[in-house]
Length: 208
Image (cartoon, rainbow, N blue to C red; front, side, top):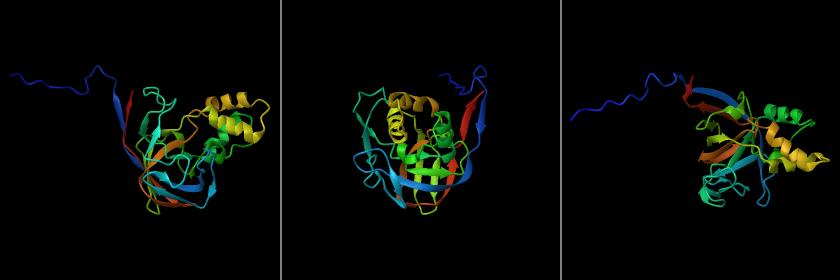
């Protein structure tokens, strides 16, 4: 029998650049948690995390129901909860506010759980990145948090927008790739405000 040789990278395919993995130093400058009945958060000194996420948080749970972000499932399908925590960067949120013509957008208005400092272009951190907190917690990044009009409505309400619908729709447009990340708990424990974070960015393949 003739042996078939598989060429995983035929010359006809685009060239591939492999960007090596790297480590970044960061800090959790502010922490927030949400009550059971609403996605907006409020400032706390610590976050107690289990494998289900933040204890008592609006987004806690090992599973969640699918929505508009998962058109491949019927709405309401039970699936893994990879959106246990929302992470944002203060500099990116400030850019969104400026684009929207607002004095500020507070992290709690858009349901953030952590404000992370020290990672350039936080929202572009690739899926699979690991965040090791000095106190022992590990979070795994699922990917970008796509901006939606529900967060936009929250902003409109807090700033007293004359046209709340227009403001709500402006947020997804101006916050694209600046909305931060969603992550889930890989190793539980307690995160405290001001805690140092070691971020491990995985090796990436980039097609030219």
